[in-house]
Image (tube, rainbow, N blue to C red; front, side):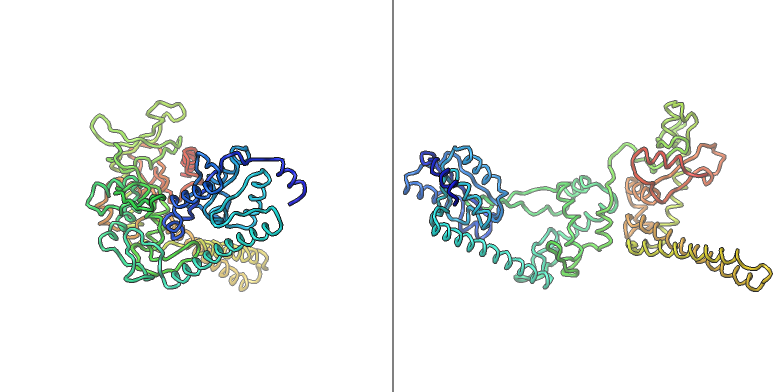
Length: 508
């Protein structure tokens, strides 16, 4: 310690102030927590202060589930602030490792404590940096504690890595059970696994998290496991029965373990245990927005999907005086000057038209595999290469001597081949783009599934297949194919303004 620091410390006398007790548990339920419970730490404070004739501060400071390897501990920092304000005369802990397990943090903070005139009392031997021998012993003790912490972390990491290498997931989420024996892969819980699959399938169908939770609570489904809470003082565990909530449903759908993957952090092992859902089903369930249910528009299949070509606004559902259903431009219905003759179409006719287009593309056969980003990039590159090849062939044809009919004929054949290659590459890319859009549809979607689904599910699927359906004003005598455009790619941006602009920009 410098001469300046010694002098400053000697001018401060905090011995008349009470000592604040600090307790820490690294992890509730751990061996460390069981060995040094909070009541045990508090008893140690009382014994130490009684032997030294010091008073315990009225408020205690306890951090749970906090590592000693960091100073980012709320109660610990609050305690230090009191010391800086000269409201306490020091800190008492049961053992030194409750205070810190990091050498640099320990030396820095203890130096500040003593500079302020405070003391650090430890049940396993007080420490101080005043004096060479004392500072050496304190540093050795904290270094040993830091080394022990590091070795425990390395042992834990090694154990986790070994478990993952054996295909062992460290926890058993809802729908699974611990394997037969310690360190064995997970096995299916025959009672709960079907509920997990139901959650994924309903989410794939477009049901909101809240809607799925409501179904599970109202239906005959196994309830979640009771919630366990451990009292950090008595270390007793209390179980609380809980129902399904939207957060719990969402947490299940986001858990990769249901695809058969054992993971911890960035490390993962595929095929470690039986899968409840496929990778494609997992991806589909986690890349969509849910559909609101129970709305008064449930009788209208295309509500929210149709837009007016004139103004870009959504078409509203309505009925005429004879009870016939229609979709009509909202602006025109409101008498807006910018769209006096907005689009209007028979609900029965356009619903059949859109359904036929959807069924031809998505119900006629199985959904193709979802293309990867690398696959799409490769197809785009193929289009670029084919386009460049066609451009070179055309330039070559333009520079040939027209008197040489043979060479000109060969060049024209090359141009035709390059043109066909470009058309094929563009068709492959277009099909992959459509497949990517269709990836949000249920993997098992077929005619029977579609027919048996509620209208909200059908509307959601149609919205995935055709993100924008534009209707042009025209009488009932104009064929729908001449006044309806089904766009299978969403415009840039999905906000209201972007959708309106995209609808107005459609070419006819």
